[in-house]
Image 1 (cartoon, rainbow, N blue to C red):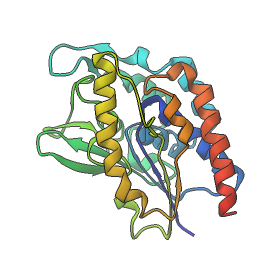
Image 2 (cartoon, rainbow, N blue to C red; image 1 turned 90 degrees about the horizontal axis):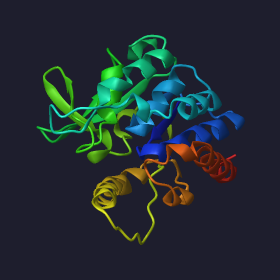
Image 3 (cartoon, rainbow, N blue to C red; image 1 turned 90 degrees about the vertical axis):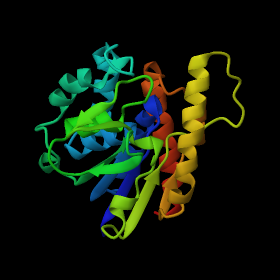
Amino acid sequence: MDIGLVLSGGGARGISHLGVLAALEEYDLRPTHISGASAGAIVGALYAAGHKPAEILKVIIKTKLFKYFKPDTSFTGLLRMESTEKLYRQMLNMNSFESLLIPLTVSATDIERGETVYFSEGELIKPLQASSCVPVIFAPVLIDGRYFVDGGILNNLPIEPLEGKCNYIIGVHSNALPVHLKVSNIKQIIERSLHLAININVEERKKKCNFFIEPPEMALFGVYDVAKAQEIYQVGYLYAKEKLKEII
């Protein structure tokens, strides 16, 4: 059976995808195809390259990821996604989709044309950077003359590339939001606004999944809570392990 796995964006909350993958492995449910946006694209790529969930978690804890980001005032963003290249090159055998052990598709948003673009062949690192390029915070990523930002802006659950390829699709959404959140500064307002908008585009797509995993406890974590990586991983693992009992 061809099993498709769709992984959403969600910043540090995306670390919960690793826990979900660990649970899937315990039930011997291994994806034959992966599609992801933003954090889901990063997790999907590292997993598709052959790394185990626990191994990827250790790297995230060790590097804290954000130390690779460098200030940039040359464009509209504040940080440069290009500074993550060193980490990706350490974790990926080769800088190409074709080198992955599992076929992968990542989504990014063409900010000028206002459309979703799917990457699944050729250079891998640039599309990964584009897919996780949060607007306002990061400068857009330039690929073939086009500027890209976070794939989750228009499609945070990119199921479309798997339709027709997989006869069973598992969707994983790490971006559960609290029903009510008191915002007290501009950072929280921007974060809340982005995630309210992003979550709307997930609603119709999750109905297309054969099985959908959305840990509600993710609402307790912020998108920058990398320091809580172990806890986020555990929440994803425990919730998925319990949820999977419905189909095993």
